[in-house]
Image 1 (cartoon, rainbow, N blue to C red):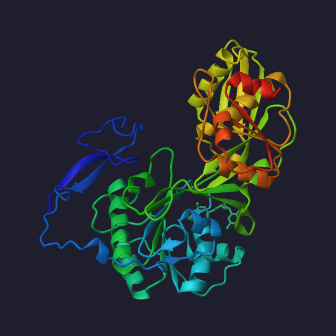
Image 2 (image 1 turned 90 degrees about the vertical axis):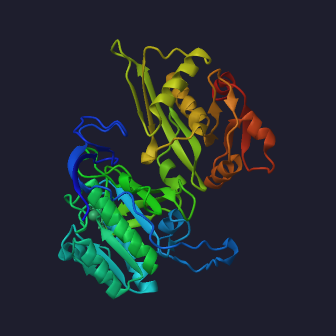
Image 3 (image 1 turned 180 degrees about the vertical axis):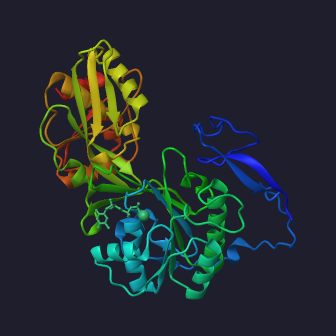
Length: 449
Ligand code: TYD
Ligand code: MG
């Protein structure tokens, strides 16, 4: 029998320390260490059986190895449907809509491919039934199980042989094998490993729902990321109706793909034309610029708003939402130094409409345009999409996937585009847009005047 050892483990990343520490040296989380019991020496296992490699050419690929969930946005984020035998983690804040999404997917999956086993360790069966009724879900193929012990869940799944197994949530189940409390790092890791084993040995895909907590009071899904095949995060401001499903890891498809949903009284509905939402309330006012950002395999048009006003205090306020804080500060410095616009005593606010988070430097030009436009209190040219990267000396750099962005802009009804000159020179096709190429921030400031 293995020896039992007491250790302290970071609940957000799984780092192990022999004594309690206030701040995790690995992930930087504060107050995240909790005492846990682990079995000493379980990390090292000796291979008892002889193993045989196989030739790469002898492996057959079957194309029908995917289930379609019937929710097109979810299927796309999964890389073209649900791969058999895969383990998928869906993380997100409590109340964001994870259970709702998977219940809706269960409906379609059960109608198409057979039973779906939905294990709820969190809500009562009545609660789930009430939600299903609200969503108009009537499929008899959804089997509900209220159970928290992993071994029992797997036993039941082996008997039922469902097309898909859903575990809601990984933090509320526990395995007899791990010695520490449910919700702790070693518990959720060991439980997930059991589900991985189940998925691989039976070919039944398994969804694990994981809550993300800011305080690290319960272990976050982050510790599972390396273990599972696919990691999806469901994001969005609870104040907005829009939800974004993002793939951050996918062994079976592209990452950074997003799916856009709207939470309605009938559950989540797919948004097929996300550009239209992020622009829907776009008017011609100063401080508003439209950019085209690449999300996975798609280009999405979105609006960036800036508000620049004289500061009432000695310390000007800077508040940016949906964009990188450091990046925008850098852009402000470039505007001041290279563009000769004095922003030193101005409060500056920047916001991305609709709750999208933009990380691409390609949005630099639009952020600058929005700030300059608000500073001058002059609207930017109407129906104009702006994108490109800016360097420290104020030069405009070429970016990738110009064609994709221009196509989306033209499809949505834009009339003009302001892009890096070097990108313009390399364009092969003609577009239904009046395209202007710029080489420096000074040129940009002139063009948008
Ligand atoms: P839920 O799926 O329970 O979130 P999670 O599993 O991520 O914790 O979603 C709960 C929220 O969604 C709750 O605030 C109510 C809202 N909601 C709707 O607006 N419409 C609906 O049809 C449903 C089922 C939920
Ligand atoms: Mg839930």
